[in-house]
Amino acid sequence: MTDANSPTDLPHPRFARMYLRNSETGERRGAAEHRRLLLAGLRGTVVEVGAGSGPNFSHYPATVTEVIAVEPEPTLRAAAETAAADAAIPIRVMPGVAEALPVEDAGIDAAVASLVLCSVPDQQRALAELRRVLRPGGELRFYEHVIPTSQPRRALLQIADHSGIWPWIAGGCHPARDTLAAIQHAGFEIQSYQRIMFAGSPLEPKIPFVIGTALT
Image 1 (spheres, rainbow, N blue to C red):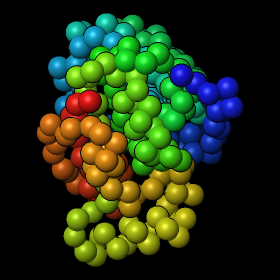
Image 2 (image 1 turned 90 degrees about the horizontal axis):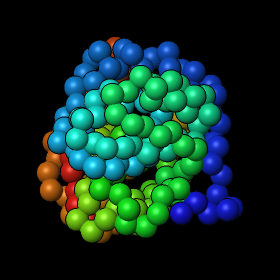
Image 3 (image 1 turned 60 degrees about the vertical axis):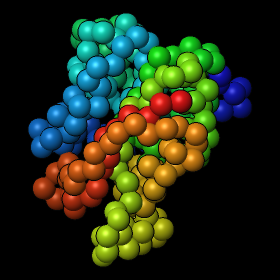
Image 4 (image 1 turned 135 degrees about the vertical axis):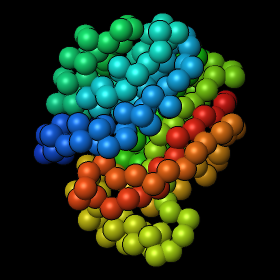
């Protein structure tokens, strides 16, 4: 549950405005299809962490009974509330952070982490929270970019990350995190994943992403 000392609002208005301006380009270039693959077959109650402006909402299948969408950035959360009102399934948008989810223990059928584990301040704590709220046998669906496996792209992203340049531009995003390994280290059992190279706009470099499923 949410810690009384944990913030639920983390304003990044400059990044939020940039994200809202550019997100439609990324969706047209392939992100919408990635989201469809990410969410296909989900059932029951779902918690989505870092829901952003709600780009996943239109892709949830009718077998989902409710989505609890947690988003700490106020500008993006307001956009998510608008998107939730137009969605075909019930979606409840809430303030909160991934490291202290406003959800009871073991009460959720599935969790969705979509382009958020790169930017949370404490990745292992966020993953521990996802395990806490999932019922036994519940699934984590993840769509995240990950550190490249080959050079020189791996070294270049490590430099961009550790220099602070990329995180400053991209709202705290850390492109050199080994998120697949972190998911396993948190105690999840990865069932399947696919690795893709993707750039959200013509001006961005292509970087590796993974779309997959893990179980508690």
